[in-house]
Length: 311
Ligand code: NDP
Ligand code: OXD
Image 1 (spheres, rainbow, N blue to C red):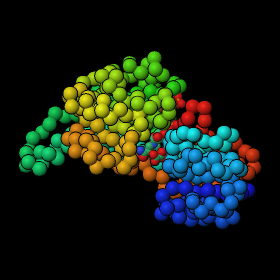
Image 2 (cartoon, rainbow, N blue to C red):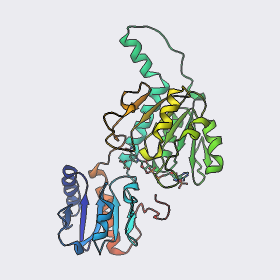
Image 3 (tube, helix red, strand yellow):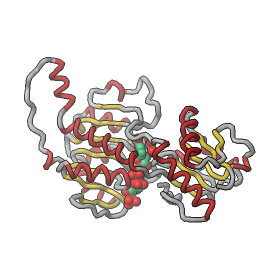
Image 4 (tube, rainbow, N blue to C red):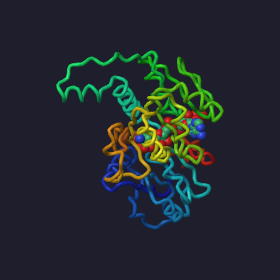
């Protein structure tokens, strides 16, 4: 690599990144934010929730690497500096962890785990109706790296799985719905809705009153993508009216979720702290180092983001 790599995230995590990157390429010149040295030195940056306007201070910046699968943090105003390439992480462990979370949330709902737990607490021996897996319809918004992996694993459990995306998908046993024109048809056949979309201007607020009304009564919602996809008041209204049976939420408009937020104590909501799939620096350092090499060699970058659509 020519120039220096800026690393920016929580202080304790930055040290781990430095160690893992240097283990693969000891020649790297790594600067941990805010100790950047001369701003002219920085040619690439690997960041998570970095102040977006700060990235305009480095005149020689050529590559921005998201420390996660999502890149919405890089597109907050003013967005990535013009002419700077943006890449994200695609990683076996990150993908597997997300599918584990989605399967856990689906199965916990499907197998009535909360109800059985409540019965246990009350010492009630009562068999609930058997779940009908082959007739339970799961719909996944976003059929990219994460959505398609979760879809395949849910289909392997014999759920009826469909996905919704911008472009058609051909996956064995998984129905594909495309674009706004097919959104309502997709929702009307969905008992459990999983959101795995990137947050962009087209997907912000997509989990709203209209979407919920199009789902069958009793449907369940799982949002593991971004808090900005969800109109929180609309979800609360749909839960409280009984139209939706519950929700599992890992991501929120404001993180950490404020202590007084109604989701915390809501009997139909399960909250986790944006922990569905956490980037493991050791697992992804190789692709970061490889992209730095490609940048220096003028080769095509891995996992490049289309800055015109924002994912
Ligand atoms: P990808 O970019 O691989 O996939 C995105 C999918 O969304 C694609 O199928 C794409 O369609 C579809 N899509 C995008 N915009 C639209 C639209 N307007 N209408 C219909 N479909 C659309 O992303 P990943 O699967 O890797 O990740 C998804 C998101 O998951 C990340 O952006 C991130 O926000 C979130 N995430 C959350 C984590 C957590 O811990 N909670 C961890 C990691 C990621 P097409 O295929 O046609 O392009
Ligand atoms: C990611 C995330 O996008 O952790 O990778 O949310």
